[in-house]
Length: 285
Image 1 (cartoon, rainbow, N blue to C red):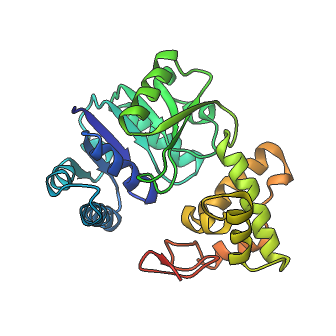
Image 2: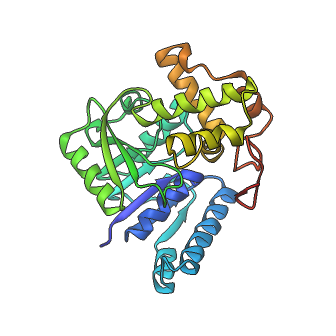
């Protein structure tokens, strides 16, 4: 299998999407305007493939082939037209995502997707010339380990686009759910509700973050607690999603003051080294 898969944004989600796309045999173009972030993403991808070899999940040959499939681009203008897929994975801001999507559409991909976790597809499609080719492709962190892909169908998304997105999920080794376009879709609406309440419990000193998470893991069989998950997703990302949902559904999604304070203090979770837990070398301490 071959084909071209373009990922715009080399943050946590972007590099994860690039990782699985390369593993699925695509020639991947990873677009990142920040040279330092782009270089770090390439370094991190190399680490992931090395780890896969060490754990026996990849052969040396497969890891080498995957590395060779990834090309770093400084901007969408460097991307040739006609890619099979372009997915934007930039921060969760409507104006930024719209601008990126308009530029991405000009590269004439067969399928255009957004990795948004909460912004309605209809709002993101405003200004696109071909909204029928546009769909939500909501991946989950870490992308290489999480099987779910939420396919979000906008009001203008064509049936064949939805079919193509479901087929893409299969090629990437993902199990898709197809949902209607509503703020927060299905997963973010439920996940953020739990996460925000857990943060309120920390603020109320109900229990420690570790014990709150332990209660959900052991009592409800969640694979990971809501506060550790918030650290992995990023407190700033959770805050952006909460504000989007608050605007759509009211104050039941109002971000707790503790979350706002932690983001303002730069405590963003795993990526900053400090959130509800302390992180060092990618591990929770």
